[in-house]
Length: 474
Image (cartoon, rainbow, N blue to C red; front, side):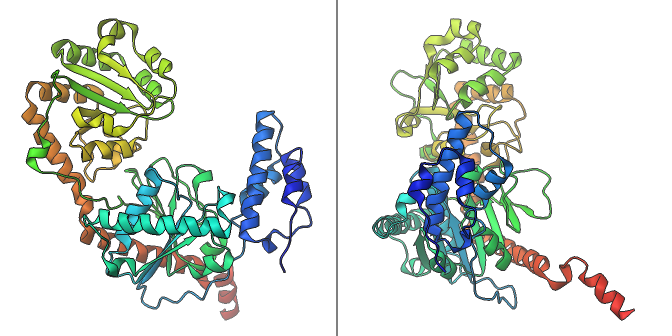
């Protein structure tokens, strides 16, 4: 039976606790998903306001908020996969806006529809953080936009002008689904494309889906170590992995690697610009993590090669980045350093000498990939918990920041060494464009998730059942 809820009145509630009390006696399972999404927005606003006013939020209130979408029941057809032959997968994603997240989703979809073992790929975009999308007109407009975008993305992923029709025939796109639409879009195995924080992870009916299907989660950041309601976590992290984790680097389109393209062409003034790009406060934090030996190495590089420049971009607070430099270094080289906020990447990488990763912070993997597309080599210290280090099938052997600076010195003295390094780096990352190998790898992981699901849902795994049967026999 459908339940109606007065969201307007709840939006005027003075606190999260009062919203929680207003929900007592209401069976949330009877609400439409669209209503639950709107309710979550109201609830979230009250929680944020309570936090800003330093109001204590009871644990029960937070528990209800976190379960609003996950606990919605969903009835699926019986799971039937006799020989573990996965023919249909569903990719569930909360992302639909442009940017690196949607690009990652689009690339992955481009790969999935090309897998010969799959007959159908259902792409579900939840828009669960944007209630305005959950109207018929908005959903239709967004679906039309995503259909066009994904078609061009499939073509671009495979280096083609148009997407092959055989690929597009496999693809079904669902936006902001109510329960019936979501149930129809769930295939043999579910893959959740997750963000780096809980609020950017797919939550529609996830507990119900987990109870009825094998579920994998693929994450782009090694910092994500826990995703609820899954059988297998596909991670780029190079650490000791548990039984329910697997190292998997998602396929990428091929990067240009023509030898002529790899040669460095300096701008008219002959400068060699080092690029470091991080969002938020990561630039300042990264600079402050460099120790005395790191700054000694950079000082030597700048003294030896007057043409070296350093452009740091993406800063939330430009002043904080300048303050993070040692005063002595700035006194000598401030005129050769540029600090910027968010910029158009095409404006800086055309004449870049190297993308220099800061060893003390994570992220910026998308920016590093942009550098490689523009034939700018990426210098990064090996670190199993850093995304840029983990994006290469064979991580760089460099252990310390001064080693990176020594390479820069070699390249500044002989640009052919830079071209040689870049050629090896591109050959490495282009192995992720070997779709035959990546298809076999993912097929094995789909089978592994299916085995984990069968074991998880087996009647023999019910607590105490085997012991009770054994007592009856004896």
